Image (cartoon, rainbow, N blue to C red; front, top):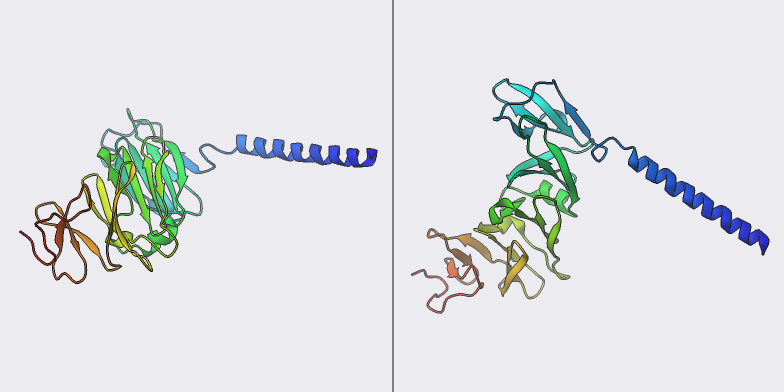
Length: 257
């Protein structure tokens, strides 16, 4: 009995020591998040400096007045795909599925790394994306953004990276971001399924509506700025209501007023 108790105490002490070492290691990681931030020179950047993709997988603060890079940021082993300037935060989409929110360079000071968020499936989708749909869709003036992937739809608050809404397709279904269309604060895209395919619309707070379609349905922006949908057997896109996903009673497939 005493031997078992001693063994349990020793095991507990080992666990606590490991936890302490792990916490210490986390506390002493180079800020921020163990990534590489480099500030070059003491002179502040001019107000026209901007963030861009740099060499060797970096994000740079480039000053066109001096033609110099005053700040750079890297995540070793990853490379930035695109940068999105949204409502005071630049969101970097990385090729490993990570998102990073960078604060602005105010008063010539260097930008700040505000947050990291990982999006499952974004790395694979980013490699397959042929430019046919949004990699990231800004909503509500850029204060919110949507990241559409085939198997997950995530909406984030831009300033702090908090998740506002998440939607997964059911078994046998997958979203098709390559056919997504953004109109105002709505992103509309097909959700083809083995059975019961739908057209889904998403806004700043998640999914707004869902309408039954065939797996071949393709939303489109009509010349007047309204939402159209092509679906078999129609030969031309027909108008649908962006707020409800319903076709107006006066509309017929294959014709436009």
